[in-house]
Image 1 (cartoon, rainbow, N blue to C red):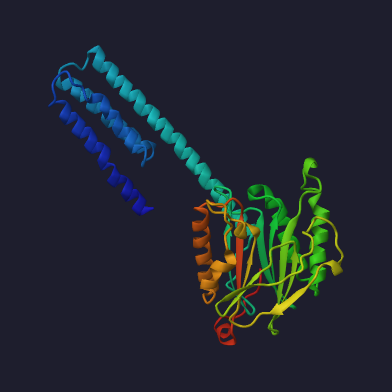
Image 2: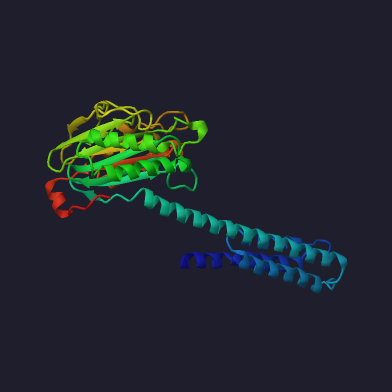
Length: 370
C-alpha cells in the first residue's frame, strides 16, 4: 500500500508542472494566443492514476490558474474569460464524477473477487503438499474473466485404501458450471471414505449425480448435464495405481525422461446414464518412487493457438519430467498460456502426483487429506 501511495504522489508532480508551465507560457506568447483552455489536461491526466480527491484538487488548481491568467491580463471579468473559467470548472467536475464512478466499480469488483476467492477455497480446498506417499501440486486456470473457479474440479483425500484423487470436468465452463462441480466434489469427499472398492465409489458418484442433477437442470437442458471424472487410487505400500475413467482424458506417467499416456477403458461420463459397477473398468499400472502422474482436464489438451493447433501436452512435459511437481506445473502454466496467447477458451486444471521416495517421505510427515 505504501509504495502505491508514494507512486501516486510522485505522479502528481506531472499535472502540477503542466499547470505552472501552461500558465507561464500563456503570459509569454502573443496576446491573441490563449493557452488557458489547455489547463483541462491537468485534471484529465490526474484521473488516470489518482482518485477523486486528488483529481478535484488538481481541477481546482487548474481553475485557479485560469482565473490568474485572466487577472494578469486584466480581463478576468470579461465574458470570454468567465466562460473559459466556467467551462474548465464543469469539465473538472465531470472528470471528478467519472473518478467517483470508477472507484465505486473498482470497489465492487474487489468485493466480487473476494467472494470468488472465498468460494474457490470452499469448493476447491487447497491440496496439501503431501498426502501419504504422494507429493502434490495443482493448477487451475479459469476461462472467464475475473473468475477463479469454473467447471473443472479436483479433490484428494487419504483413506484406509490409500490416497484417492479425483479430477473432473462438468459440462459447460465458468460460473454457470459451479453448481455441478460443487455437487460432484461434495459427493466424492463423502463417498471416498465409505467404499473400499473403487468401482463402488464410481457407482456412488454416478448415483449422486443422477439423483441431484435434475434439480440443477433447466427444463430446456433436461438430460444434457453430465461430468467427466478420473478416479485415482494410490495404495500406501504397493507401487501400483488403480484408475477409473468416466469419459475423462487418461493420465500421463512421467519418469526417466519420458511421458507415457496410461491406457484406460473409459466408462460413460457421470450423469449420462446409470451404469452398474461392472461397467466401471479399473485399470492398474505401475507407479514407482520418483515417477510423476499428471492428471488434467480437456481444457489443457484442447487449448488452441492462433493457427488452431492443440496444445501438445505429452510432448511438452517430457522436458520437465525430472522436475518436482511445483516446478513442473509452473512450467506447464507458462507454456500453456504462451501457446494460447495468454487467454484460454475453456477452464483448465492440472494435478501433478509424485510418488516420493522413502527418504523424502521421512522429511515430510504424513498430512491428512482434505
